[in-house]
Image 1: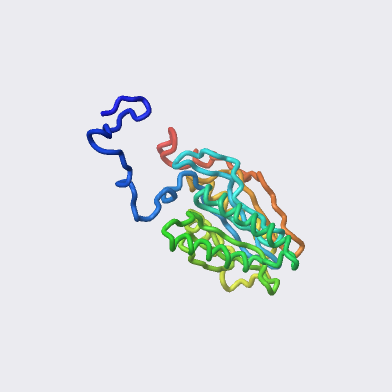
Image 2: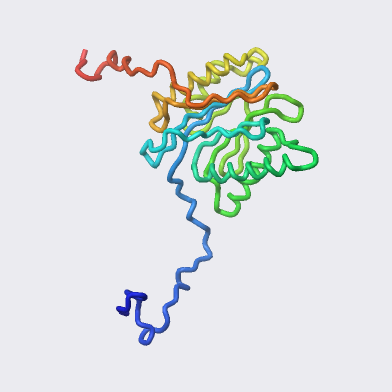
Amino acid sequence: MNHYPEVWGRPRDDIYGPYTSSYLQTTGPKTHTQSPAVTGTSVIAVKFNGGVAIAADNLASYGSLARFSDVKRLRVFSDSAVIGFSGDVSDMQYIDRLLGSIDIRENYSTHGNMLNAKNLHTYLSKVLYKRRSEFNPLWNHILVAGFDEDKKPFLSSADLLGTTFSAPHLATGFGAHLAVPILRRLFPEERPIEEISKEDAEAALKECLKVLWYRDARSLDKYSIAVITSEGIEVKEDQRIDAQSWAFAESVKGYGAQVN
């Protein structure tokens, strides 16, 4: 072995030939973004008469550790749409910068910003599909809320494979298992959107966030909620879930000293 400090630990060139790292080269897919480290959980959204409401908690987990409690996962795009992110936070930041560059380009164009929520969702789904096709996906599941070209409430999702789905109410992450059944019970298919008020939508989202706080280990009691209407976008950040007491556990058989 060569013991000179600058090349310490390498084989000697005069005996083994010059050192080369060519054996490290590979033609396989990139893997440096295949293991998300810091992730966000559920995003929930529902249409109502005249708009869309969307909410997400502020937690970003480092594996199983609730590491960051002030990560805003709702992004307002040019007062025309709101994007909610679940999944890898670093990929969320990349998409956020991408949206920022699009916003600047649109605002400086001769026609002004013409993108609506439907256009934005189509664009993001193509970006996600392209990255997936390169075997270097963006590990996010996003919801896009706003209005389409006909000024009707728009809500749709796109995942890391570029798969899209639209419905009157959607949720990502663990919310797809816990929040969607609640929303289906509150807003069944036979109930038209015209009968759902803004207050009903907000109350339903808060109820879902409360259930997730109790049942999802990767959730938090601090959240952000945005309401998109024809009058604009109203965003409320750093909200707290009401009645977050665990006192009901004392009445559960087997909890603590209670055995009967």
